[in-house]
Image 1 (cartoon, rainbow, N blue to C red):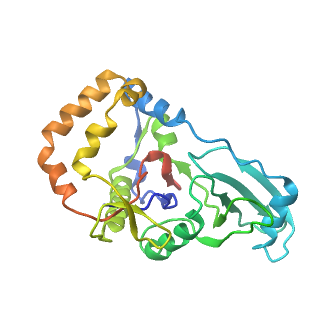
Image 2: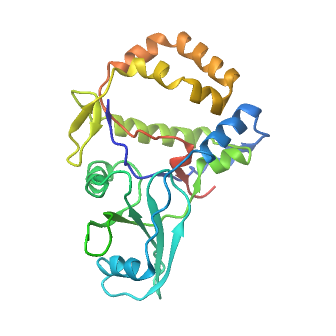
Length: 256
């Protein structure tokens, strides 16, 4: 598989029959998974002076008056600022890349590849300005929504219709085939060869996983893996683009 690690969050609107959704009390396994998601370590947020933030915004805002520019204190690797303009309802997310200096090229190209079929925020601008800041950046239209993880944490079970939408988006991503397994460079070409997919499971089920999820969850996962060896082998035979972080944290739900 080829990993498109910097695909923007996918957006999903529950269909008209979202009344299928109902609430339950999450079991301890769910709480453990949610805790592991929210406690995940990340690098420090990039501290940029207001003067430099305004200079960056000026590169793509056509001289509009900035109303607010606030740090979004979420995310696993990059730093995001929410930008709004006086008299304009549309807001924007300006993402500064700390972990991948090529992300500012990669995300717009992934959006160009998938944006017509997979729901994701529109890319407005992408660039680098070393005379202003040390980090390249991309600007997206901000989309109101709630992370699927937050809904699940409240005990809301996604409807079958919503699950189908999420699965469809994933399938559309996987339609893009590659000949090699590895990470993608800024031109969406495979670099940094990776081992076969069917060896990854044991690689990740290590002491760190046990510490975060608990031995019972890890043992249950191992049992599931053993029962699904044939399915895993079939998946490993299909070399295609994958999101790399397709999970409830990164799936936004609108409405419902």
